[in-house]
Length: 363
Picture 1 (cartoon, one colour):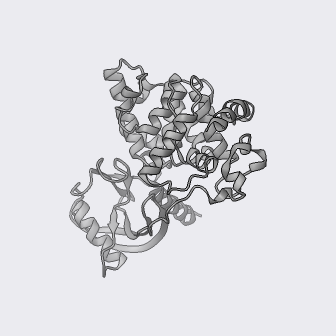
Picture 2 (cartoon, rainbow, N blue to C red):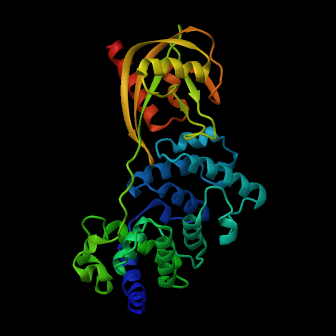
Picture 3 (cartoon, rainbow, N blue to C red):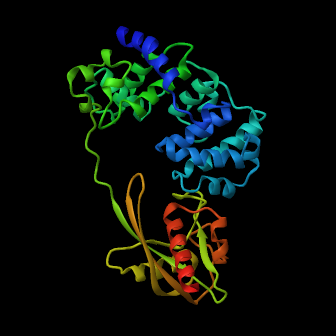
């Protein structure tokens, strides 16, 4: 530990000062910008986050503007990033900070972690980067660096391992340099200590790394095999009326992808055809009897805990008027207005297919 601590202070931090990547949230650093960037970066690559961060900051340049916005507007700016509970929580948190903290982001770990959507990792990231609190972060990159540095042999997905790795990070933390320490550790994992092809020859602390010394750094971190991910089949409908408008439904706030809009439908049950699934789901969700028409598109998408294929068909209403039975709301929109509200990625693919078909018909 003593040699590792010295290497962190004398080698890693100077390396980071020279090699740190340019990122928009690293300039004009404020608690608000740190907070938004950290939420966006969770389980998402830096290159994917940058355009979303810039777009979000342009629309909501301050905490006050975010707190005053509608949830739908916030979700629209978040659209495509996934993990939409993060967007709903940051909107709630902005309102809490405005109402209970006079619009100033709380400065202590005890206050930060009370905000919606903020756990121990985000607390440490915000606390260290925005307020230089002596808090060490533990994310996937840091876990990989620590596992190799100490040739850690326990399953890193276990609760025990995470506690022990957090203690290692806490012990290595350079007091008074928490922000630089955390970013340096994450940067090392993201650019040098890579999962499959670690660049040990370029690593500033390889001389104290037990994983490198073993000659098998990719043996670490040790992870138990993941459980098989469930796969579901979904049917969805593009329901049109005589005006050519399309029916969309809003998911309930408490549901997965809550607050987003979708082409109505749901999970196929055992023994059903896709068309039967769509007919049943729209009856249950909106109280309408429909008949399905032509096939539009099949969308395949992976979520964090399952994979999905969504088969989408055009449909017409035979009887009944839509009402929100198992959804939060519904509306009819002209195809040119469909993108004005927020959707998940799967439904955005449906809109893409619908627009391509309209273009083809007009050619």
